[in-house]
Image 1 (cartoon, rainbow over the protein chains, first blue to last red):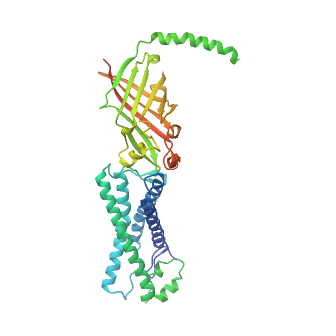
Image 2: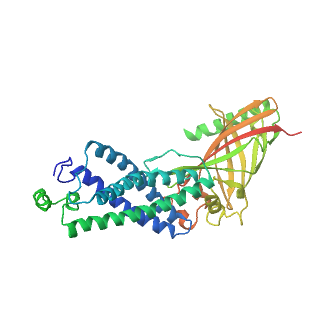
Image 3: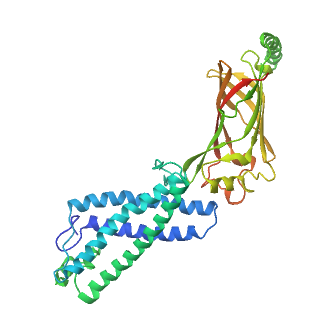
Length: 191
Length: 191
């Protein structure tokens, strides 16, 4: 599989970004949910420290991914899609990119506002984006929570859409983001 | 050889001590200007540094550069006035697992000896925290000013030496053992 994306499928780099970030986002939801249920204490601190390190990893990957995407446009959507479907698909992907930045940034600002600086796996500490501010923290926390809900919603939409393309439309939309799938099969599946 | 030297050194020390003390005048008695004085600390939490201070502390400072033998610091810190710019963290620190201010409301530091160093002065003293008394050396500088003096310095201690970390907080994985102390005291002569 070539590194670059082709008209038929996503390249190895785009796929790697997609699946690593997807795995990190799932991890983020798990860590955040576990931490939310805990009282203030060492265990919560530990989970949130990991959550922050992974979140900053997502932010760095999102920057690289966006740069890569600008140089390597993704394969076009299948011809059978209606203008409305295409618009919805584009809007979902734009929303994903906005959230890939908005989630880590609101999280980072939240930590800054509560004067809990963000470390990256103990290797270095990120500078605080804003000063200590209780009201800003509360606002950012609810924003972060709301955006997490939006992210979860469009992720479900995204997965359902991919399955619909694969099983209903029987096109190559799911397979072209799948590693370990023969390119010939993708071409033959293309309608 | 050591045996032969020992009495000689003791004799030399006996000679030099009165000489040093003889040159000494009396130490000046100072009190601390609470508005302009700071007693701060820095710890590491989830791999990132956080800073805190004590809003209320009192100090009796007896000091003169030429009367080190008669110089002495006596500092009393009101632990419940700890301020780390986050109320959750402050509450945790005041709680039974860290400072336990309900049982031990104050920390007390008294110097035993003060010596001149290349950079300024160094003091050996005992810190009592959570009912545990242990030596904590400090390095400081003394700068005479128009209406008194300025005393600035730093120290390092290990929180677990004093039991400041029970239960989950005994672990140093997410809250480091080492804590840095720094102070900047504005001294006014007692009248």
